[in-house]
Image 1 (cartoon, one colour):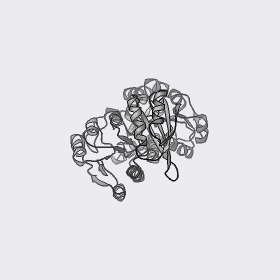
Image 2 (tube, rainbow, N blue to C red):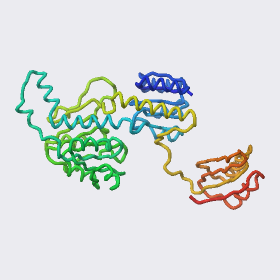
Image 3 (cartoon, rainbow, N blue to C red):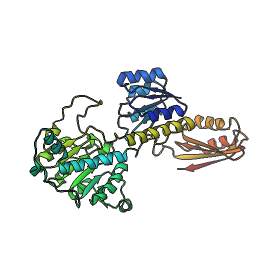
Image 4 (cartoon, helix red, strand yellow):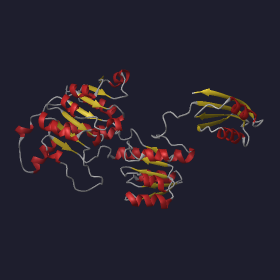
Length: 400
């Protein structure tokens, strides 16, 4: 199997892929048309990327069966096209959770103690202890978490270490999970905004989370409170954030922001960082050696399992529920052509098989096929299947 790695990738990951017995081409410079051509010419069946965008032409031009995002999200991949073409899209969730949580808390501390401003003044030869001695401190102040996935959960023990009570909202957060995490659950993001001294955002980018944090959210925040975003820029209405900074004295720390450059280096025009009380980092949340090694190991695991079984873990684009309405159960002798007879009759009846599983019993003499169908076969079709060969023992139809 051929694997094309089109982004910066750890040496341990490249070595692991080689040990898995696949043919690896590594070229982190590939982008846009060059990547499209490389997919076509290489005959790669697996594509590994980090921040590189994977577009419709890339997915249509070659023989890809699997795209692995070596990271937690997958918004840079055209998942709809991949699904149309039956290409698995997998990612590496949870492997960078500690790294991002560490940065988020570093940003919270930097906001409270104004560490960047301190350092900048010292570098310019300015001593202003009187000004920089003003800080509220974090102990006893409430941390509000928007999103309680892997990263949000990692924020909770760190908050406890600083003596910060935590309130949180997530679509998946139950009262039981909140008790387990030692936090208080809120019913909406607006409740989190109103009840917090510090808000940290940790949600994945989806249609329903785009501009999740907007005008109403910032209106609900307490004047002078802190806002931290290490998730995705599109989750926040940045214009609304800028107004809140000017009008309510909100202090903000951003690892992601609108207009962020796509490459690793370049120039930047981001007026938000010229506003008082705003600090930022260069989208480095997951960029620790520990996180990248863990992601590389998970990528290798995904590719290895795919090459050995034809199935990939962590796939994000499988249907939650197929269109199947009925389940055809065929108990049969494990002999050549039995299932071909069954599928011939299903096809002749104009019925589509959505999913199929054939389980062989010990001794390989008998098996049971479970075939999910998009409509119910008639009694006549069922009798035809039953009588199509003596190797079929029993046919049953169940509604799903």
